[in-house]
Length: 296
Image 1 (cartoon, rainbow, N blue to C red):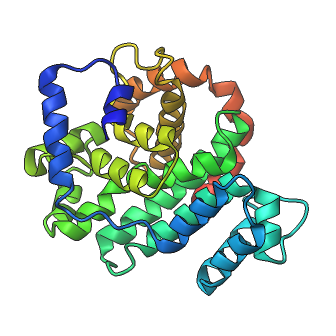
Image 2 (cartoon, rainbow, N blue to C red):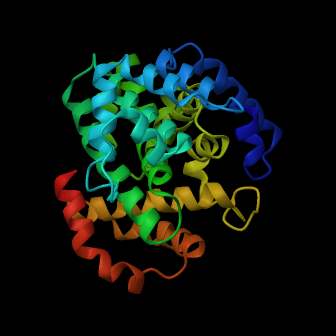
């Protein structure tokens, strides 16, 4: 995780030590291992000349995954003119990088399928909607490709389900901090566990071979208002993804009547700095945004 620390604004020695201690604690809680199908798919896709037939075979061995890929890529979400009839056609239409991200997202929820508590259901309901909004807004505002926005939205808070499984009392903590902003919740997490869900999520994303800028953005997404963060060329890519996630989350919370204007004041300053003025650009998207939230 040292690379993630390097991506952050300059930190004190004390902060670096605390981060190292948190990393050591996280190793003990049990991060879901990267699924074998994803590991093998990534290894083949990184060859100089990837074998698309082998890649298709890897996916087709997992019938449920293959069906999910075809269903997803042929959905209105992607809006492709040509429908994929086979996994190999899907690979050609979407490309290896985007297919890898799609597979990662599809397998993420499966990794936590054994836990079906109300708190976990609420997490997935919120996470899936934030991911869909992030994908749509990323494309329409020319911030990020569709699947990149979707993957960041899904994995941004993936430390939460890890903590729900590992610590029975964490569900109560989520309830108690429901009306706090995410930074307030993370402070409670660090006081109780020695780390927060952003650090756990980044560890999972890194171990699942998500691109560096993706897991690093997950690691630092609670520090978006640090001095010069948005303007630092080293963190600009992270800043765009983080701003996209904040905007998507704000729209969902507004729809659910949980909008906190005081919290949004800080977030809006950052989002506007990174993405530019939004009011006129968002106005034509209102009906689509409402539909995405309703459909999930």
